[in-house]
Image 1 (tube, rainbow, N blue to C red):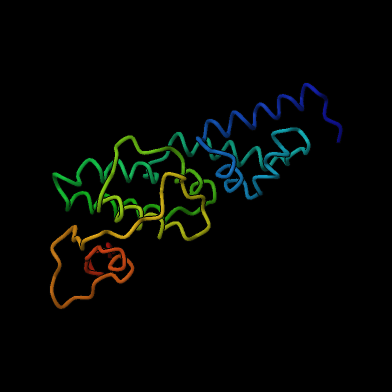
Image 2 (cartoon, rainbow, N blue to C red):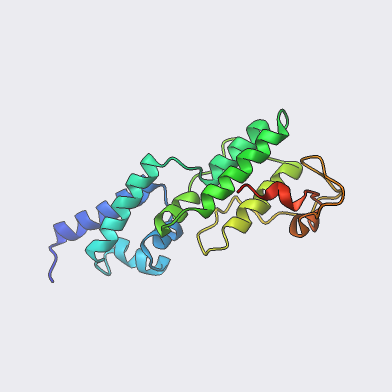
Length: 189
């Protein structure tokens, strides 16, 4: 198939516009359409012409990003930061709701959208360690992980975001980081 220079240019511009509309970086866009970042770079540079399916998937992803009703990782951090000091129970609820929504994302495009954006509110100290750990754990399905979602560092002193109930098991992964929380507190279903 021969594509004219004008059509070729318009196709590359359309791909770039859809990637921008979805809020993707190249890695996220590649994940959303099921190709490598290198292959996506070939499409954007005009070295390779993508299938119509790539264009349709990016159009769908841009629409989903605009109309989403679920929290991205950045939204979860903002929600936790909003309530971490004033209402730890609500902050924990927002964290677990965001994690659960994340686990329910059923398409590569939605999992890529989850990784877009950056938090507007800073999250520091033990809440940052807890939130980053929980969000990184939920991203073990191969989705892109935002660069700002750093691997958590262990706390210097043990910390409990909620009252610990004696005689119940602590979550071992979080305990290694110095966070004491009963396993049952992390279950929402």
